Length: 240
Ligand code: PGA
Image 1 (spheres, rainbow, N blue to C red):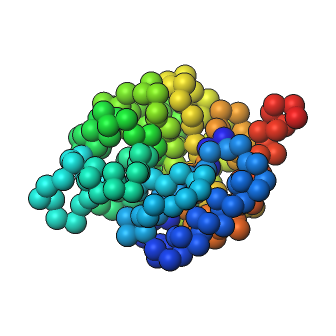
Image 2: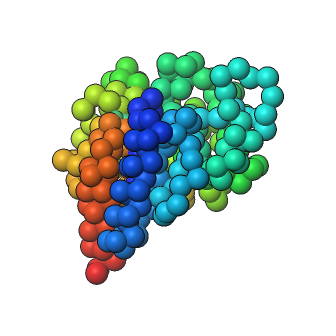
Image 3: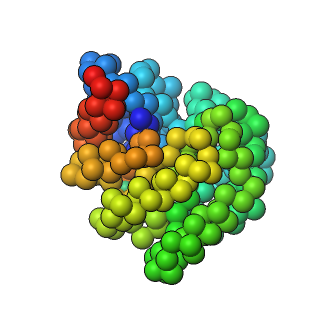
């Protein structure tokens, strides 16, 4: 499984370093087989030593240049970062990122060989229109995206479930992930209010290959708990 924590605009450099050490130590000690990733704010990037992958929440599709407030490939390279989130709903809806810009970022970082966690998800009004409208909306978010890129990970995150404590029903998550499975063979993460209390149910669903977690993973112990839950599910699936 793949378990990823998106810190968003939380955590300082010092807090991130402490978190990294705790979680990386836990993974080694317990022999966790899942791939664990964190996406700290760019101010907390560092050359960490351990087994936890560090990715960028965002970067512009350039090596460097005159793009005030942005970072590019050069700034990521300095820290050996080779993983990036693209298309997160907060960037689409709060920062106003268009599908064109998202495609540009996707293609640029794909060409640079990055692991890309590509986020999709519908707003509540689309969900209320029913399954067909929902799948059409997700299809539009796949426009221009190479769904068989070998380093692609998809995160399905309903906008109305992010940071709200509300999740779709387990049946709905399974239904959507099963529909997404027809479109790509790449790993499918679920995101939106995943926490220690619901991780077992959500991660055990068919075609759920992991989770992208925001507030529910801000605490290192909670992230470790979710990694243990994922480990048990993987072991059960493999009949261990
Ligand atoms: P949440 O955020 O877990 O706080 O709902 C998930 C995300 O935005 O990736």
